[in-house]
Length: 200
Image (cartoon, rainbow, N blue to C red; front, side, top):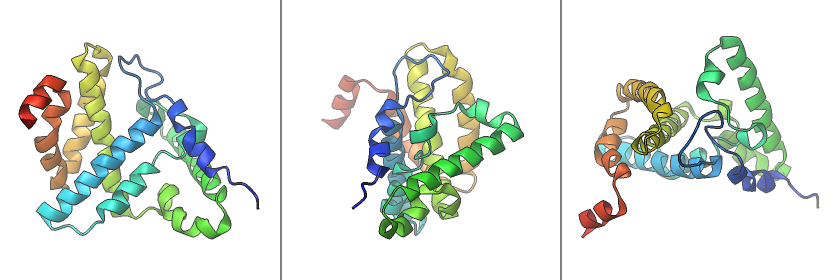
């Protein structure tokens, strides 16, 4: 039986640095980021379901989020402003990402490809789940920016402002985003002692 390379690419995700063009106080890789986005997407879907009457599956949202950066296992992380400042560059990056996603899908045994297609190839992901995972992705980056600023890294000031504006757009039709931030944001910057005091 032919060996698949799929899991091998996944296991290389911790080697791929995020924010590669920026100075960071705390390093972050795409495996850590994908895990955080999965947790946030799961929480958003639970909030949407339990508080606002939504019907998305939290488990499906988390699974899609786990794989949302699969293309970067081959392409590396690309700075957001670099990727989106020029429409022609954006189109070319999107083409490369789709090719990478399709290669990752094709690396699986044929009998496993169908259930993975709508997880790996972003163009095939259900739009409602895709938007929720995108919101989770932005929240993760926003919390990272706040954390860097907390440790005196002014390079993330403009990143925080850009992401805050993006989150404000999401809040227009996704009240679960505001609920999430009101419930969890502040303590993400708390010290261990502060967190422990609140939990006693």
